[in-house]
Amino acid sequence: MHGILPGEIDAILAVAERWGPVDRSHRKLAHRGSYEGLVWVAPSTFRRVLAAHGLVLPEPVTRAPSVKKPWPDWLVWAPNRIWIYDATHFTRSRRVVFAIIDMVSRKWIDTLVSVEETATQVQVIFEHALEVEGLLELLTDTRLDLAADDPARPILLAVSDNGPPMAATDTRAFMTLMAIAQHRGRPPPRPTRRGSRASSGTSRASGPTSKTSTIPSSSKRSSPACGSSTTALRG
Image (cartoon, helix red, strand yellow):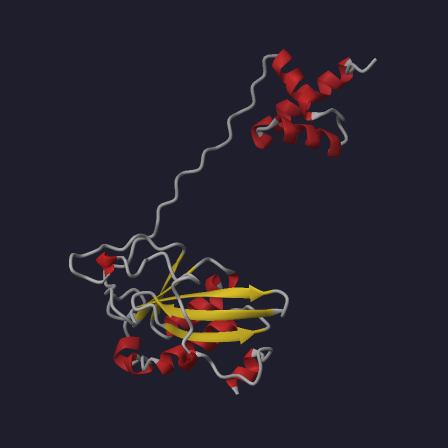
């Protein structure tokens, strides 16, 4: 009494013929049959019917392995040439903390506490960090007149993940205006040289961690309170 009817078998075969190349899974096909109003059977029943009729679903499309984006040829492994930045959420206090760290020297450059996580916060913290580190002097008219892909134009490389504030169109426009090149995604291993600090293992290209990074009191941004917004920090 619990067997499926011939009409249900025909409906299963019809769903598999029409949607098999798209769904490529008996589970997805069983769910599609139900919400399309064609047939209501369990995924295991759907699979048994296909096997009984000698039907094999197409294999899922295999993804090509991702290739890490290499370092640009113009990059120099030196302090104030590679900055890595990210945002950390403190959900209990409803705040987002942006931080910039020098990837080579491990210097904690700047911190910004905000109630929002947008491209505006990225612009605010980078403007202040460039001013603190004295890099605004490098933004000469001669440098800014160069093409965006000219190796002599960037003053540094900003490394980040693919978060919305980092990948935003406004962030890309701001970085281009400030002659900062972007590298989103996990950076590849850097080449090591004998006798250099890099080969001693004191710094890594994978980015800062909470175990290796400390926040000196002199580098913290002054703000009226932890809950201050971006507007208050600008003031």
